[in-house]
Length: 104
Length: 478
Image (tube, rainbow over all chains, first blue to last red; front, side, top):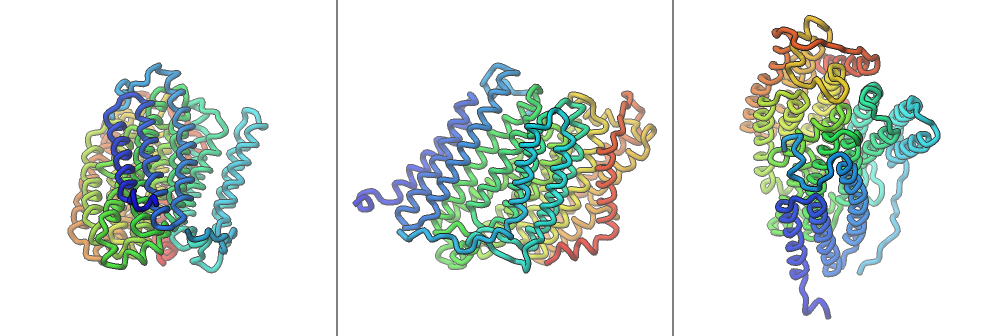
């Protein structure tokens, strides 16, 4: 059985590791698209822990939650890419450091 | 695996405000498609939609009523918040009409986005399930990302939208991870069931649950713009179109506080020793750094952004207090704050010029000699924000502080009062510019009727709530 060889904590560790990778990516990288991808990694890390909690604890609402997360992530991608494109038209760069009209 | 049951309690009457407003928002989109370039009809439909929403919110009787297997609630808090949301969205739409004409913002979806954002806020104030809270927050945020960047040709608006989007999505990640860990350690996403589980002392010390709580606080802290998660807010407030800034500092913030209050007062009251200290630190930091930041600003929109950060610090006190008295003081504070804020932003719009110019404090010098009534209104509104009697801001703060004192949070209240005194400095700075400095630039103010109407409502609301607070306090208390 899967449960015997791979305990829940393994999945949680995987999820936490991915989440931290996402955070580090957001903080360290300066390319808008890469930062954006790191945020998606964070959201998917959450999905892994939601599904594994459900599987090991015999629950069901986490799966519904993970579908909601995917829907929202998709909506966010479309809005985010639209913002990046409209910005790119006025200022052709994807480097975050060059957006300094408003002081951070 | 337990079978997924068909929901027994789908009560659509309870959901009426959400449904009505969604229908009107879609109607705005469709009418925009066929309506040509004249947007007057859209404004009319949006305002009627908001009015109908406010009325339909009272369709459910008796309250509290639950729907969708206890994941949606109609109670006193949510009804009052729906009223605040509809008022603030209606004032935003009134402020936008003439501003959009001046700045050349013409898309009809502007109004639809404000309505959809209001749908999200209503869901957020009525949600008693973490999935619903997450969806509400995301509906609000995604609409706001677009609204911030609605001036597609303006680099500042683009930049503000990008920053808001990246940091907002980042914060969503934290919020979501927190919710997941809480779900994993309690086995439910429903706030009432979480409250049952967390009454048990053994469950309270679960490290996953504590970690989840911290992440949840970080996520909410981002959404309500509290220190140290506030860095997005001055930039976004400055770069966004001014009516959107006014909207952002009232409606979505009130909605985030509604959810914040509900989560901590309903789901985790038994665990208050573990989160009280963290929230107290955030509240104190917000008040202090909000004031400190505001003192150093010269741009009026940035100054108001920092002032709203320090107000967020005061409002977190209500979450820490978490009694029903604190809930009603939160409601009163938000209502007073919305009238005052819309009045101030109305004046900022009147004085601004095309291309978001003329927003520095020095542009206000000598205003009292040219437009004494406008300067007087601004003074009243700023005094109300500072918390001076007999204006609404004073009663709001008084009510909030007395709720906190009753729960024994004396130190926190003393810090808050001191910070409230510090805030006089930067509010008075604007007043000094208006009354005591020589005029530097020519005022070319077009006194447009709708914007003036919003300012009048703002001033009357501020005075009315300040002088006759009893009836509203009676409505707000439950």
